[in-house]
Image (cartoon, rainbow over all chains, first blue to last red):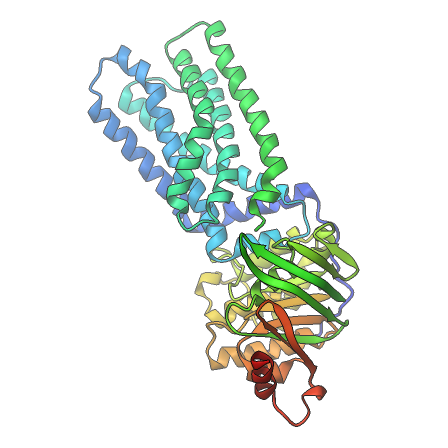
Length: 238
Length: 232
């Protein structure tokens, strides 16, 4: 044991900036996941299994495949996302690290936004791997700018609500069961809008049909991010 | 440094703290003792701003909880029986992360200083998952004092530690307390508390049942004082 030569006045914390705290939380999650790959591998294996099962279950002609693609894709993303959200908050809770985060002298919404960024990154990574595999299996071109935009907006809405509800569910003993029960009713609007908008792009529907769904996605993202920003402090406090 | 008046905490219909009055002077080392379920952890969580009081006044370092919680948290370090560090990060990465959360300038020099204090300088680049329970607890103390807090709260810091690890933790605790910090520690280990603390408060049935300084114990030992407080 080394004897300490610490001084008691030289390392007073400056007020940590909101943005630096967000970046710190996101960096921490990404660095830890880069090592363990627990969360990404679970989400990825689950996603690949789902699209594989659907591929064999739905032996359809090309036209019908296009019409079901958006539903299959968003079912896959939604269930895989739940796995990731649960795991992301469980890591914080099991080792008491959530308390460690809450003890920091920063606005607690910075913790929320940091977690949203890392959860969104995990979800987008999984989607980036799933999309080309899906394209090959279903013989459908998914790399359309409009569709990619819908996937981004849908994922933002899903993660914005999911991170907030996962923070709530993780405080309970039945967190694995509770999160989907809490989450899916709340994200129904975002999933419906995402499925409709994705389907519109895939079937070549006119922009006037797609635009209302895109607007709904954007409105949902903004409203629920704002709500989460306001209530996160109360959700995580005992 | 810490002033608590008529603190009440309820969980639904259950009242855990029933009007606790508690005052700690700067530099004091207070051992908060009591049986299981007495409310020690709840009390410490309120001091740490992790839980809101139902009623009462809590002031720490001149700031009031829960209104000025961020200012209190900047002056507070907390060590619990859980390490509050990430398994998949190294010791250095964990402290770097917490340094960013606390807005510590010149963090790398401070991290080296803290790792030396807790005896983990040689393992700074090792993943925390490879650490023993005792090493993790020492890192947890490093995390808690990284931002040089005025007040450090220890909640059952010896839980799950073997004799050697506990002895090493004694050294670290004495170092932390020896730097003029105010320390409040909950513990079931009366012998350790007797060696470390300068004051002993017994929390029983949601109130401070007895309080004594080391000198105030007189010829009797802490165990006798503790038993009398619980019996009364």
